[in-house]
Length: 194
Ligand code: GRF
Image 1 (cartoon, helix red, strand yellow):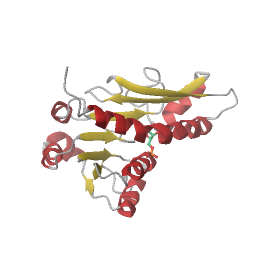
Image 2 (cartoon, rainbow, N blue to C red):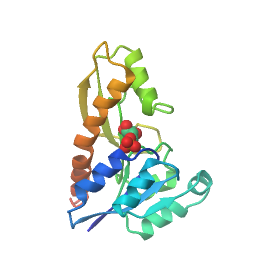
Image 3 (cartoon, rainbow, N blue to C red):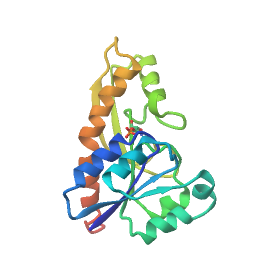
């Protein structure tokens, strides 16, 4: 049995897709939805999906080791960030080497880094006159959006597209690919280290 902790601070549509994808899989459990935002849509989704929620504030996250300890106590195998905005504390990154992944709504290394999230990303893509955008799924390290890339998929951006249009195309890619890539990363955890 592999145990996943999903970190999300927003609507949680990706978190729900992932939970639904694994719902019938007896070898994978979404053990926890972890969030810093009690008003986030993901909390309602977690209740509906009967997944325990762990809420925390900034001080607990950055000034104590409580979240890290809890993740270890719960034997979490993989941390999946799905719309989680805060930088992972170094201690958690060190405790989960190659076991934290994130999805970014653009084709990294373009349009990444601090402040590049949500609609800011899609606005920047349109502003730059890009012909395509997409998703990047990557390992997480101590820097925003700089961990090793696992998977990318792209979509066209038309000259007439608004940031909301781009957001919609990107979300289709996120839902189509993220659960499957999570499954692939879980499978690699079983492989012996070279
Ligand atoms: C997604 O666009 C994801 O790429 C980004 O945050 C958004 C989360 O959306 N990191 P949702 O909360 O899963 O609907």
